[in-house]
Image (cartoon, rainbow, N blue to C red):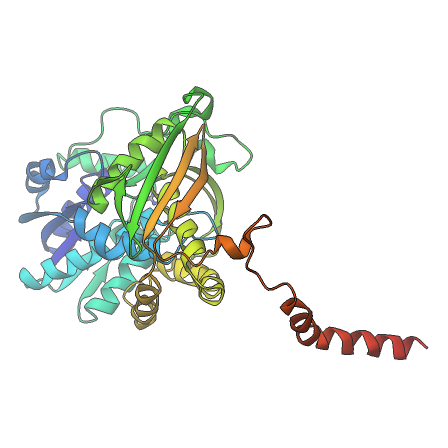
Length: 399
Ligand code: ARG
């Protein structure tokens, strides 16, 4: 058996390498990615090889993550259950596709991940493996192995000279990438408890943010962010910059009780300053340039698209078809949005576009009004005809 493992360098995936070798005499290839987490994963090579991996791969997928995953989700206005920008969910199919490509290169017959049996991520990995490589065998050792506690797992690690974390385990589980940070466990499991300041990694507390806040202008071209304050930047640079600016103004904290795929509710805390700012700005621009019908239809589509990402159906036909529609819907989403970031709030202050369908001469209540007021009478007469018929029926029946 030859296995490619989605490797993070943490205790679980380290123990998995050893465990697969011991139980199945497997050859294990460790695969990891840079998707914008704080520690450079290139540094994991030695650790992986020492733990028993036969080879180590590390790919910098940051730009691919932005162009192929984050931008489509942004253009779809995808927020799971109206709030979560899906940072963790979006990263799983990307990592899974790298694992599959590596399995093909290495002629491996099996792929593996280190997710537990209770979360969403196992589903996302395994659906992606099915979509992309139905011929590969999938293993989820953490779900299958004999350790009943972290202590037993640590004991096994010590016995096999796997470096175990010396500091006390952080009380939270943290997943971190370019698009945001997901934080769970510990005292956050009580949905009534306010998150203590030490859970937050990149945002300051609103009461410690500058009193005056900061104003910014974000520019878009066909639904893709292309500038901040008039300066052209790559989408990834914009995300990195907005993470910083939003973070210092306490923007991007999200506290959410959400429905997991496996049926339970869980309390999650997210930090996603760039996602909050870009979603706010992007949708605001859509309000200005889209026809009423298109905008309303997109409002209805967004939760479906978000759910599809959350459910791990990224590589489905449905997503590809929807992307065709969404891409087409973005052709006029070009322009700028002015925002005020103020102590945890992201407030829209202005918007403009060469493709705006806002007509001041029609909207105005002051001089220069070109709206034909006399046309309203006939419009209401016909639009209100069903209302009239309904009203008359009521009156008849009341007699
Ligand atoms: N609830 C989020 C999701 O399902 C975040 C999961 C966080 N994962 C983690 N390993 N900490 O996408």
